[in-house]
Length: 328
Image (cartoon, rainbow, N blue to C red; front, side, top):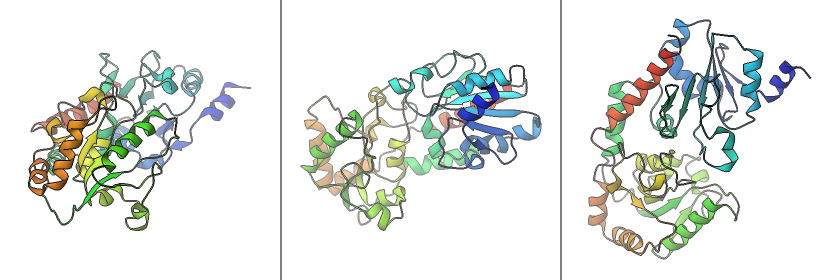
């Protein structure tokens, strides 16, 4: 079997309409033209300035051989820029080949992930950036979005329900499902938790009333259960940001108890400890649930640090600079 035949077998069929950007082992819920990085590359003029370049984007949801084969099939192509991005937890055994963000492969020109890694080919670029900030965002856009996230108006009539969970069911033996189940069971002693995902499902409203619009669904609730699937330094997904964006108070676990310290105001987050008794936390939630004045005081404190917009804008600037460096 030829290399090209193997290459086609492993290749993930996501390609931009102009053929300049290809995605391998990527999430397949959207066309390549709608992927965040496609818009970023186009908006910042990389396709116009470098019309002969092909941007080859890799992630971890597939066989690593696709990178090796791409390198063998195109060994000396200076116009082929290989970029790696992973929003998953590299430290999970399932992603062992990607533990080092593919920096151990010389063919990778730029690696993006959540780890704190000192390497000239690497940029920390966590998943929540893609979820909360459009790729064509200007500095003013970033300021506006951060201000909207950080300062929200309290409306007691709109936010009348207690707490929600929207989580897939990974099976009874999955540690993440077990943690979420224990948390829901603890909170049920205060008031009933509405579970709109597959895990502990007890309401169809997310689909029947809100047409699977999670942001609108969550605007009914005071609290949102949003733990990560693992607690690893720097590993922060969209979960806490979805809670904040919908106006809920996040009940969070992950990132070693220190999620995005330069961006998030940890005083506006409630932290769950799956290995502790959480008595103090549960008492605080109970008090906030029953006292509108105290809840409003908690709700109206800034959710983000004052200079969070500068941190996000710097991520955007750094990504553009790293991409420009590929051609120097």
